[in-house]
Length: 466
Image (cartoon, rainbow, N blue to C red; front, side, top):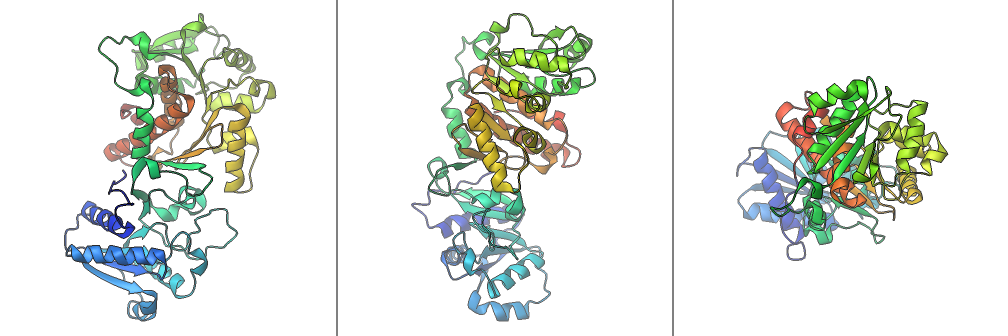
């Protein structure tokens, strides 16, 4: 959850960070007995740290400042010391533009922080981490933060696997939506925190509360073409999620043999039956559906591939997931039929099949951007900080979610939910961003109830809400 502290044009970053750090201390059950140590470098990041220390002291907290000039003696006197439970270390050694000077005693301080066992809060970016994840510089020692407090937006390195684990939980302080822009002049990447999410929701009329005369036909009709014999669970997960999306009518098209499974698990859904044991034919009257979601547990039978071609040609707004992506990746003819404005939801393996392998994160992003542009569609690359790519190359990184969601079926839930938003009339980009955000938030709620290990994909749909 993000913590809003005020407009940074009106507050010094250090003051905003101090208020956030106090909040974090209270989260840990610490009162005014919390003890802070600020490790401050000589640049702008260090000055933010000094201001943070000043504010903490003014509010009655015990706060020690360790500058680079004092670091040698500090390290000597604290060698081998472990931090106490009531201590919080604040890392302000080097900022996003100060990586080149991160060496010698600064690097030694980072090593001490990492070995101390303290709860660590980094200001702006963990010291030692390059702001640009694609730099050729070698990061030999990076502070491993429990929380990174970023002003207005996080640096791109914090959102990608190479360095992202060192950032810990990302908390945004600052000005909200208007400042929630790219960290470079190109304006190509965005961080979707609560403020940005609320702004997107407010721009979609279909997501606003309807008047009392609204009926189910006003809220869209989603067709789910998912599941085959032995894989009906995926269809159930997608259907349950769609039923939580606010969509007026949800129809699940499954093999005749699986009819009872859907009726039993999802009594609110309509069931359309296929004559085969997999997807072989379109449902009747395709005109009545306002959007389609396909691929979850679909299977890769040749008859399914042929029927998928007919489904793609129907021209409906469409979410394409799982086996539908696999079929498309192996058949250029099918790929050419993907309707413009679709939402593709690949995990990394499916993305590789669609685009080919990549050497590094930079090439992965470039391939995802090229795929979205070539198909005039939205591509949702699933993972930590799920990346939603628009056809014009903008990248939206999600702020919600938990590692507990790394379980089978979570993608089926996401696909069904985005499909429901599309059916309601959301644009493809808004449906993807909002769906990803709510999906991650539902995962966080599920983990809070069941725990990291015990939670599973079916729990997520139970916690889906606005």
